[in-house]
Image (cartoon, rainbow over all chains, first blue to last red):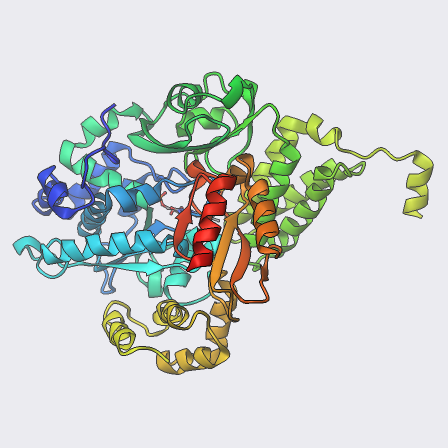
Length: 423
Length: 156
Ligand SMILES: Cc1cc2nc3c(=O)[nH]c(=O)nc-3n(C[C@H](O)[C@H](O)[C@H](O)COP(=O)(O)O)c2cc1C
Ligand code: FES
C-alpha cells in the first residue's frame, strides 16, 4: 500500500516540501466547502479514532453545537503514554504539517477558534519541531486571521505536559490545559457541551487528525475502501518486544497480526514460538500465541478475538517470556499512574501489584488468583475514567488465558504450616 | 526569577488562553529550565505572577512527575523499565547503570553529578531499551553504547 501518513519523502517535515507534495491542498478545498459538508465527508469515510477507543470521528464532530455564543475548542491528543505506543512521535518528526492541516480542517468544520495540541513533556525535542512547523504555517497564512483570504480565523497552540499518563485521558487533558492537576472529570456533561473552560470542545488523537486531509483530498468513498470496511484507513502499527524488526509500520487496517509480525517485523528472533501478544498497548487484553490465526488489526476482528485495537501498539512475547514478570510490571504502571481520585482504582491497583509481585517471586498463595480477579472486577466500571478498566483488563485477560502460569507460581506450603501461619 | 525573554513570552502566551491559571504549566516549565528545579520560593513567585493560590501551584508541582521540587543531579538519567523495554533487556541496563554510577534507582550521587530515575514508557518501545538524559533520547542501548554515553557525559 502507498504510504499516506508517513510517506518516505526526504524533507517532508518542511513546509516547502510538504506544499510541493500537494500539502494544504485539502485545507484549501475544505475552505471552499460548507463546514457541515466537511464533517459529513469525515463521517461517511468511516474514520474511527486512533487514540484507543476507535470512536467514529465524524460522529464526534457532529456533537459540537452549531448555535453557541461560546468559543469552541479542539484538543489534539499527543500525550502518547500508553506503554507500547510510539507512533505519534513519528508524525511530529516526519509529517507535522499533515497534523496541522488535519487540525485546521477540523477547526473549520466545527467553527473552532483555538486548537491546543497537547504533547507529553518528555517529547521536548519533538515539541520544538512541531512548534517550528506551526510557526511556518502561520508565516504562510494557513493559520491566523482571515486565512487564505477567507473569513475563517483560527489559532493553534502547543501545550506541553509534564509527565502523567492520566493526562492522555481526555477530561484530564483538559484540566491539565487549564493549569490544574490532571484529574479526570465526571461525565456527563461531555466535552462537546462542557469542555475546556466550560466551552464546547472536541478531543482527537494526533494520528486521527492526520487522516482528515486524506479524506477531504480524495473523497470519503476512496478512503472507505482502504482496509477493513467497518474500521477503514491506514493505521500506524507500532510493534515492539520480541521481533527482529520492531518499529512503526503504516498498513491498511484489517492487516492480519501474523502478517505484521512475520512479514513486516521479520518474525521472532531465534525463530522462537510466540507465547503471547498484547495487540494495542498495555491496556488491551492479552492474547495467547495460538489465538493469533485469523486475528486482524481492526476493531471488529480484535473484538471477536477477545481484545481490542487500542493504539495499535503490538507487543510480542516469545515462548521464554516470564508472563508473571510482565503482568507485575504492567500493574506497577497503573498503580503509579492512578490519579488517586477513585478508591477502587487508587487502592485496587496497588493491591493488584502487590499480589502480582508475589507471583513474580514464586510466592503466590492459594486463593490469590481468585483474589486478583475479584479486585480487578471491582475496579472495572467503578471509576470516573477508563484508567481503572485499563488496569483491570490486562490482569483479567492474563488470568483467563494463562491461568496455568499463575498456578505454577503458587508456593505450596504443607497444610499444617498454612494453618499455623493463619493462626 | 525569570528572564526578560521568558517574561515576554508569558505576555504573548496570555493571548492564547482565557485564564492566567492555564499558564501554570508553561511558567513552571520556564522556571525549571532556568533554575533546574522549582523551589518553594519560585512556586510563590509563580502564584503571584499568575494570580492563583500558592497551594494550587504546589498541588500542580507535586502531581506531575517531570517537575522537581528539589535540586537533582547535573545529568538526569531516566531509564525506561516498562514492558517493551523489559522484553529487550532494560534490567541489564539498569544493573550496569547502578554499578557504573554507584547509585540506585531514585538516587542522586553525592557529587550531585548524576540522578538515576526509573521511568514509565517514553514512547521508544520500537527502539528499546532506552534511556533519556534530559531531552536527549538514547535508543537501542547495548552495554557498549551505554558506556560511551556515560563517558561522554563525564567529560562534559
Ligand atoms: C488512562 C487513559 C489514557 C489515555 N491516553 C491517551 C493518549 O495518550 N493519547 C490519545 O490520543 N488518547 C488517549 N486516551 C483516549 C482519550 O481519552 C480519547 O478517547 C482520545 O484522545 C480521543 O481521540 P480519538 O477519538 O481520535 O481516538 C486515553 C484514555 C485513557 C482512559
Ligand atoms: S516501554 Fe520503554 S519506551 Fe515504551
